[in-house]
Amino acid sequence: MGFPETFKALSDPVRREILVLLKDQRMTVREIKNHFDIAGATLSYHLNQLKKAELIHEEKYKNFIYYELNISVFEETMLWFSQFRKEDIND
Image (cartoon, rainbow, N blue to C red; front, side, top):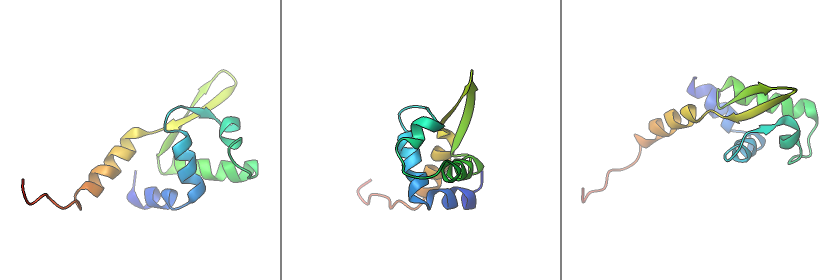
């Protein structure tokens, strides 16, 4: 995982919304598509960008492909951001 890919993936509002959808459950492409008014090819592009950034991964089960968050990448990104948090003066 590289931060350039992560930030590029997070820069698009559709991809951010996909991540929000996947926050609580894994979903199929069809389930994700039901939340958007975009072409299937466009959704596929967004999912590929998220996979390239390793923010999501896919799991095949029977005839379906499920997408879910890759929490470890979020944790690594949050850890990186936390270095910019100002320390409390009273601590």
